[in-house]
Structures are given as structure tokens and as C-alpha cells.
Image (cartoon, rainbow, N blue to C red):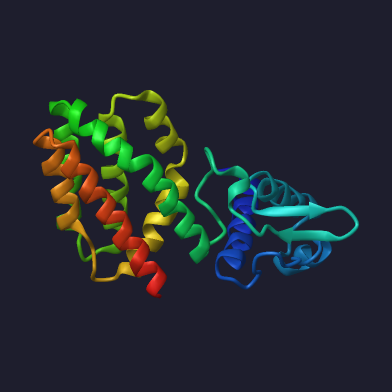
Length: 224
């Protein structure tokens, strides 16, 4: 094992933890390189490498002469980003739902027309996982995301599918937060209805249920 790399990764995770926990909130100035050196007991090069990596991920912003700041938004590197470090705000979750309504309502109508046997098998497997993991928020969220990604795949539109894949990590963060917010209100029944509508070649019902699913989530979020 490369000990130097391991040390750098350890420091990187510690810095990310301070950001995700809110100890270093959005827009705040983080300690200087010298202070971080003392805090973690590592070299300046190690600290500088971590700062550059988090800056490239859109987590930190280095302002020359002012210091290094936690970014205010997650959207600078939305496509192809690794697991987001900055926790999603309520406003950002609502924006994700708006985006999903634009894309996924259209997706499900097309999927209800074009889905083949393999698509249906994948969707059924996702629904079965959601039912099985209905009391496990993280596993439920992953199965939920895979269900929606497989709907995009079932459209047989490579652009639509690639957009969902490129945003997978940000979407997963969104799904996890949303599932935690729902607590015991997991909506596997609506997902089953969507699957059945796609299987029955019923785009109108698929559209109606998908819209209901997303609107219900938006309403629950707004009530919090």
C-alpha cells in the first residue's frame, strides 16, 4: 500500500467530514493551509493536494489573498461528479424534483411503448428490491434510483439514459435524502403501479402515476 496516498486519503475524508457535518458550513472560510497542517499533523504538500482535489470537485473555492471557502452550491460539477460532499438543501431537493418531472414523466410514457422483456425484468427486479428493503432507507434509495434509471434505459434513447447515468451520484444523494425524509412513507405501491402500466403498454396511466409520485414527494417536502 502507498502510505503517502493513504495518508492523503485519510486527510481528505476528514476534511469532507467537517463539511458534510456542517462544522464548516457553505460559504464559510476554512482554516489556512498552515492551520490544517497543524490540525492533521501532515505536510503542506498533503494539505495542498487535498485542497486542489476538493476544488476540482466543486466543493471548495480558493480565493487568492482571501483564503479557501466552502462552495455555496453543488451544481458547478453536476455531471459526472463523484458522490456529492455538500449536503443537499431543501431548495436543491425541490429543484431536483422539478428536473425529474421534466425528464421522467416523458421517460415513463416512452418506456410504456418501447420497453422490451429485458427492460421489464430489470424493472420488476428493482420493484422487488424496494419491497424487500422497505425498512432500510439506504438500500431502498438505491433500488429506487435503479428503477428510474432503468425506465430511462427502457426508452431506448441513449441521450436520456446517459443523462441519468451522468447524474447518478447526485441523484443517489437526492434519493437518500428524500427516503430519509419520507421515513415510513416509502412509496413502493406507486412504483409497482408504474411498473404495471409499463408492462401493460399503458403510457397514460404510467404518466399519471409518475406525476403523482413526484408531486407527492414535493408536497411532503414542502410540509417539512
